[in-house]
Amino acid sequence: MPDELLRPTVGAGVDMSARPWRLMSQTYVAFFGGVLASTAVAYLNAGRLGVDAAKRRLILLTGLAGLLAVIGVFVLLYGDSGVTSGLRVSIRIVAVLCCLAQLRLQRPMDRAFQLRGKDYGSLWGMGIAATIGGAVAEALILLLVTVVL
Image 1 (cartoon, rainbow, N blue to C red):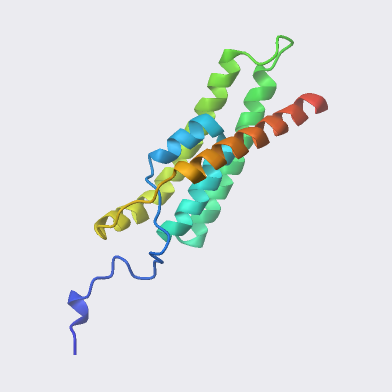
Image 2: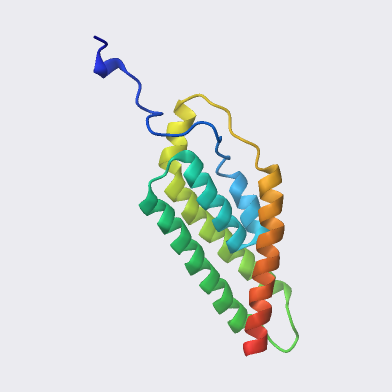
């Protein structure tokens, strides 16, 4: 009978067919795509890492809070002159801060993945799609906010 003490358990319960993405690569998606794009990538990556359902819901709630913060910043800084560079920088700061909070929720399982000695997956395809889709969706939401105001 094999000894249970010596059996590795780092990869227990994690599907290794879909390789996760590097955590810091997600910040590029957040910077260029916004809060919605980074939330989508973080949620999908959390599933690939095997993060529990409660933390995945926290990732979604963080994304919702980030989107509300972006809308709040937009309402405060949007003026008659239109979209200014200060507004764009502020929205990017909110997106990156939201992404950093989401990365913190993924970090323990990412460390476990690193211990398994596997390679990360490529974020290029999904990252570009999420960046474009998230930026367009966020722009439409902010356009809707300007119409309502």
